[in-house]
Length: 109
Length: 114
Image (cartoon, each protein chain N blue to C red):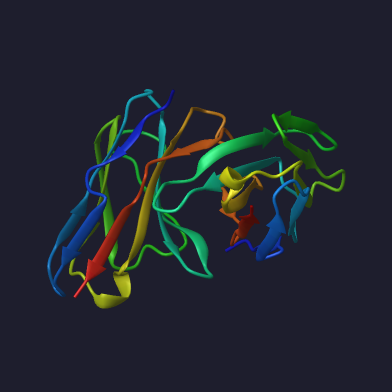
């Protein structure tokens, strides 16, 4: 199946720092999604992107649909302890959705 | 808010047993999905369904089957459970004809096969 490369795999940051993570694919996608998964819970949708170049914010989170349509970025500003979790990207080629392997974020108070 | 409910959060079964995982969504979504989640491998699609009584294989269907008799319910069946099916299983649903609509997930079932 389709492979999405998500990086970094893990991050350890101080509270208040900004965070950046990204996903790349080998083919063009029509949709990019970003999810967060808390321990023991299912993934929760954070942001959905449908157009190349689109930049969308959700509170302190901002995500962008890359203009090549092969990548997407998620930024978290001024991190807080509750940002801890695993962040997944998902892309839709069309066909089915494919998921990245996740970025594990630890925020140190 | 979309609610996707998986019947069990934790389940322990024995090798060779037939195992049923149930998923119900309350938003009248056409599309439903079953994934398994393993460390380092991310989410892998097992089966999906775009309509009642319809099913399609995902990337890793071997050893699994599904049933969609009603729109709101999508069941995953492990025909004869094996230890390599120990995993976190996630059900998701999504809206409509435009299949690029976001999927909404349940809280998962952590299944252990002994």
